[in-house]
Image (cartoon, rainbow over the protein chains, first blue to last red):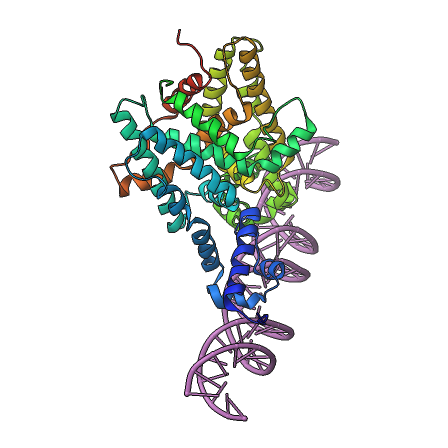
Length: 211
Length: 211
DNA sequence: CTAGTTATTAACTATATGGTTAATTATAAA
DNA sequence: TTTATAATTAACCATATAGTTAATAACTAG
């Protein structure tokens, strides 16, 4: 195939991926249009040509980062399995999703940290749907007397918050472990191990009887 | 007493408190010197007069937000109590501290969300010390066979992350509960209840036998 | 081959904002 | 009262950066 000298899809994709990286690494304001354009070798004006303005680009980045989370996490939970199975799928799928899309946790935490102000609708909806799903699983488990003393919002923070922090703090934990090697910051833990650990702890929290 | 028309301490305090509010609400870049000065009725040049530049101001804000966390959380943990008591003190003191200093969680999450880049030393040290303390408590509990299957870093995220998220998401949770009242976002939960809930769940997680 | 459309570019503009400066006013010490 | 010092101010500057524009190059349909 012949190499095209211009291709809108490629250009748009370059812009989105580079922006996602920079926004999640440095935040919205600290990321400049010129920085993006230089990093992906695309003329600055293309950003405004395709995304109208910086806010439009940011919205597109968020949509892109979130677009598959429903397919992966929500649709994977086929309705009305065992609550315990559902819970396991929820935790592990979310964890693996975040690992595959490592920009998401940082974007999420950053948005949450100024939720008082403006949170993009696409992100708000996505978070609400995710919580609604977990909430349903937990309530069903409670109804079946499998889970006890459930406070869904707090459980949700324990799961999602822990996974997000685990990913975003990775460089910090590595730095810390170099300074003081007596303290284990779980540097070598892989995501699968962490997800499994969380699942087991949540089971204990919910008073699930060992089978 | 006669009202002073000028007082450096008052001026500095005004700047710090207003900045802390604005930085935590809108982030570093999105907060302008003029915005701060107008919000606290102090001339803009005073900011640079007392804090040299914006980064200096931010550093002072962080120091101020963190300065008492050691007294409150770390010193309150008198050495070598029962691990379980220590754990309870750790969780509850941290929770109450965050409630009393509601700007801290947002500043923390924001810094964490771009930890890859630059994290101020004062914050890095504070986080490390906090984690070191919890780590010690957990290890001691494990040694005494009170706690089992401990992964300190993950437990730490579960505690601290949950508290931080609970505080920063307050406005979001209220907004969500208005939209869909079927889902309980723990809007009316007070911090004491949440801290107690977390403590009980962590006990279960650590396999603490009910007394 | 041509004409119209789409993608790309470099150069430009307007504005917001971090930071400076030099003058001024209040305060406290002498 | 005088003087030195610390606090405060308004006006200013330099620069970074979001966004524009007008020209141009590449592709496509006819």
